[in-house]
Figure 1: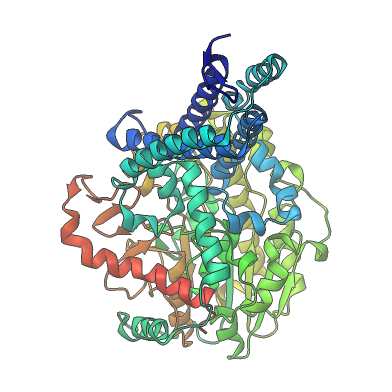
Figure 2 (figure 1 turned 45 degrees about the vertical axis):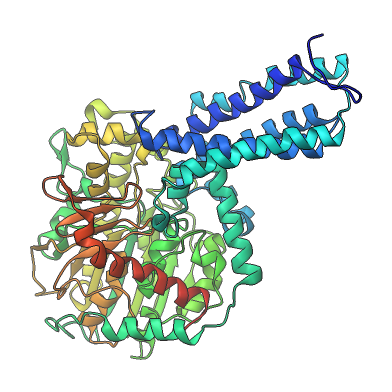
Length: 618
């Protein structure tokens, strides 16, 4: 047998060396697949940015191999195979978690995963598996056979000093490779977005980084608000640009009805397919309401729960994990609490498991008087979410009978039927033409159904005399079409497939109706879900001094900050994952240096929000 000779204490064979190379090559191939199937990285495959990412990934793997070489002797090949299996499982989990939540699994996410949450979204996650994901396990039979064969031939013990020397060489090579990629990354962007870390330095380093941050936060970071941090928060609110007071108090004393619609994106509004409107009822409502057409969703790892949080607290979601799961014990200055001070009854209504997203506890923290959940509804009709969800039509129909409408109330309604995946709607009676049976076609049907249910709800409000006596707000919570399936959407809209156009599509409808309030007018000020609370507060004449958002009816300039660290304004888009800024109208690159001060002031909002939440500043 060919050998790499070792004088007295065994040897590494060429066959074993081939096994080590196969291990590194197969994991690198899987890493390459992960980065591009999630579209964290985009073509050309071997652009400078992607090459540095791959070099960094190889560096981390070499360091990992060094540890195995040093710690394991006769069992080193077994350790390699077990590592291959574990890393393949991690990459598979990351892939499908990312496709659903647009983030990688991190320590805070993993520790706060609720079995009930996973069991409820398992169909959504399972639907995201693709046949080509088999790449994650293709090598395992070969690696298993190689391990068995090597063990049959006998694996020699290698003196620790020799293993240490080889391991040190691997570690040094890995450190050098990683340094090459690390020095090319935008270090400032790393603090805002774990996805950017994965995009620039590879998925495995993103796990290492997030674990380090988690350990620092939970075991070493001072959880008490320092004087400097307190001053930062106070200065932020003191210096925050003041909006005007137009329309202030126009809906004072009236009911507030907020409807958060599951996965409703803006591109379906005022759009037809086959000559039929996708959302005829919302289109009609817009004609007698004020409509915000540059309104972006801002959710992160908490998805729907993040949208609820943004609306009711005007704080940002967390960099990692969901606020609802991680910080339900904080004091929040919220919309429900502000209205309760005015004598309102406050209700949250959602026809699903009360414990899902830890809503029972979080709604107490936010200040809702009552949570009318799935156990409170008669399950008389199931529509959407693989047929397991109470229909939106039934939800709306039953909800108004469960709250006291005889005195001022705040009702926060969260719909469910149009939840991903949209397979349930494949046979729904709404013709989507060439998209019939496709992912996008099924979503268009789901949006049409949600619109129909909202239309029935509006009619019910009118019958009960609530439509003319309430401030009605309707908005979408998050995206419906994931980036890796964006080709169908771009084809449907006739838009070019590029990152800038994709970013501009991450909008949700926002409609505010009140009799006589700018009926039929469209406001194009750029904003997002964080702006709902201050906008509503102005209309209802309530104080909201600690909101991070702005009143969209009075804002002097429009902008929205995403948890990823990207920023969109009325005039430009800053893509944090690329470190570049573009004119929003023409798509032409701009000189980022001219905007650095303004961008830093926007991104400071993420820091302030994190301080408020993590250190319970309120």
